[in-house]
Image 1 (cartoon, rainbow, N blue to C red):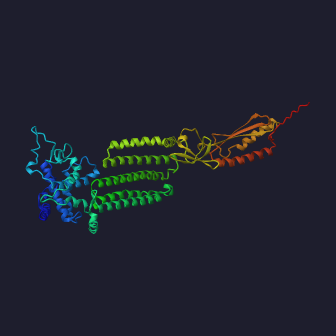
Image 2: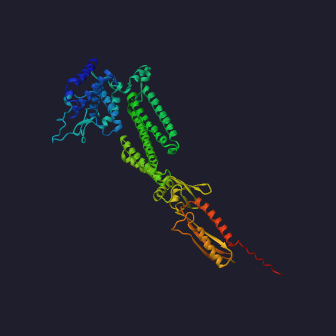
Image 3: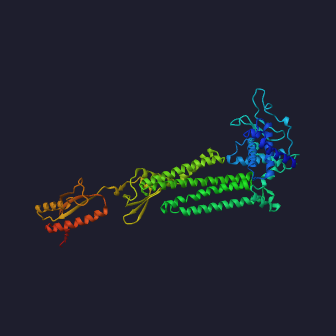
Length: 555
């Protein structure tokens, strides 16, 4: 056995220096027939075994690593992995390879001349046979019908999937002379790094015993890695949330920096997969389950990052000097950026699911069912979101404007995805759902171009016509080009009507622009001026009069 390994190692070194491989370094394994595929498979497994025994998993020689990688590529070429999820293919191929090699080292194979070559696989009509099964086994070579390897023969997908099962069924059989003894045991239980290998050597032999397909030390290492992964991700997300607390209002740079931590969190499960696969060297169903779930966590963490990028991209755009942070345009930008982020997250989910081997139809069906359930359970929320979209598109009001809606009168403080907040004139805050705001009649006081004042001055009924006309003339002089005057809206003054206890002098003026508090200051000065002028000119104004009539019945 020792001489066989030495010979194989020297053979690899020799062929890498000056043999056929140096002349044709890209020449792949021959899979033109079941015989060629089986010979190529055994040859490359023996090369990998020799290098593994000689150098270990982590050789410092670049030449050795290249030879191992080449052998592994040729071994994979002998297997039909088309029905295996992409993220499983590499490990599945390696595990199937060592298992099949262990099987071949224990069972009796047909003599080489009895294994069909390409001519033997031809039918009488010139077509090729699709299958050949090793006698007395379920190990099948299948002809590839499509793709770049069309026409070649590989181990069938079922054979690859059941390789470990085949090994368990023959594990009790002794090795044949010249076998690669302990190939599977060495590959499946030896650590993938030097420091871990030195640590495992110090452990008692009981820690190396296999339980449920893995060595005991591998189960312990798996638990430690998983606990460490969840702990590190929890700490990272906690720090990220602390930094991002308050959103862009707490500081745009700080808010953007908070995204760094979710990005780091994406790489934590990826590193865990690398350690479990290449250092602890987990295998079989356990490896598949762990890799699948850690890959799902990576996928969801990536979706969180994409959604976070969408939110922050909107805040970066809104921070431009020409955009008000609480305007309708700003809200529209935020919604659109989040929508784009959501779309990219869904694309990532579909592509990631495809990579993990989840059928696209299942993903779409799941998304449809989830969407229907979400729509039924969150009808009011969706109505409010659509209402906010309508408000943003129509722009009936913006932040800072005074509006009247329902029984509320106040200034718009915030337009959110779910509701609109109004600061009432009495200081209270009203929160109105956007679905309600979208279908209500809204009076936008804040968009009036002017403030119109309509007033009546009660004149005494006993004044003369000349005095009444004089009052009109005086009021015209007072209002001539008044504060807030606009030539398109001159003031109007006239004797309006005879009331029961006074003569009504009416005037209308328009104050530009519509600054309410400046208007009230001007109105105060105007009223004082009218009182002083009428008093000086001895124009009597009527006082409120009440007539009380008492009827007493005399008996």
